[in-house]
Image 1 (cartoon, rainbow, N blue to C red):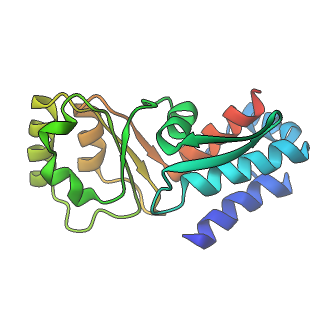
Image 2 (cartoon, rainbow, N blue to C red):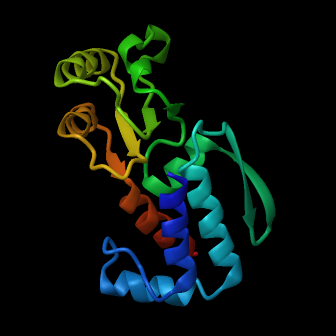
Length: 178
């Protein structure tokens, strides 16, 4: 995973290569934007946070106005468009035992692997999540593609699914639009 993170950070910093997930206009915007050292540092900082496991509860971000501390769910929410009040989970097995105290709470699952996750387990979790009115969004940090059952879990509960290539594009869009 560290190699993958370095590859994408290298893409940001070398300007000559952007992943294929970027369209030509996005690539041009990123190249212009990342010539600014502050924006380059901020995008690297945000991407490093979003790909670290376990997810830290609070994130220090260097903004033009100074150092600011934000909750991890607020940073994910700002970048990905998920709920800023989401409960962040780092183990897919935590979905098997959703307590009623989380009823109505958006969940953000940040994981690299799904272990022995099966479509049957996904169906059970979807049933419980719908009953408890939980939306489940997924941030998939693996080089492998997100499985169809995990994508369906996010969609069926009203959440969203993001892969590594999505993170790069969304971080750049966020940093460069400021």
